[in-house]
Amino acid sequence: MAEILVLHHSLGLTKGTLDFADQLRGDGHTVHAPDLFDGHVFTSIEEGMTYVNEVGFEEIIERGVRAASELPREIIYAGFSLGVVAAQKLAQTREGARGALLFYACVPTSMFGSSWPAELPVQIHSMDADPFFVDEGDIEAARELVKIANDAELFLYPGNQHLFADSSLPSFDVEATKLLMQRVFEFLRNLDARLFDMTRL
Image 1 (cartoon, one colour):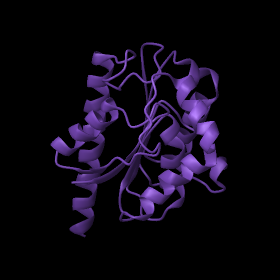
Image 2 (image 1 turned 90 degrees about the vertical axis):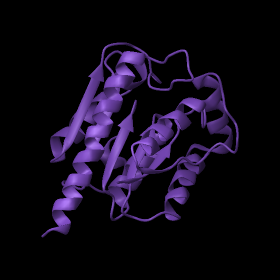
Image 3 (image 1 turned 45 degrees about the vertical axis):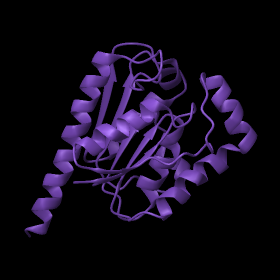
């Protein structure tokens, strides 16, 4: 079973994010879901980003990095929207990462001053008409990452909602999330199988 660090989106550590973590725990994984917002939870992306700008974008990202520093290096990094930046940074630059799950966002690998580790598995999930993902360059970054990584998948779901897999929000899409979770569980099973094969060498 995997150990996973889950980094929340710009609305904070919502019940939906905690529900996601609990689903992974229910499958036998060890999951850490730190609160990067000191208890603040917001009802809109605009409110959340106002808080991020007040605290400082780099500070929020570093809170995610610091959370990882207390955990083993051989873990999987999962990020939702804002949390993708720290998750992707950690997966790309912290030695020992087992994989990355990027939801609703992806940034150019050049942002972190190094290349993506070619053998590091990654899944990217978004809706195909999400304006944040499609119109702000994330989809191009995701497609580029899929090109350069040996084990990378980009999944696009029909719809225009951003935080579509958060069960506590009006944007929640039941069917898309069901498929997303199936793909996430398969990703984790494949990592476990790969680790088992390596231990037998």
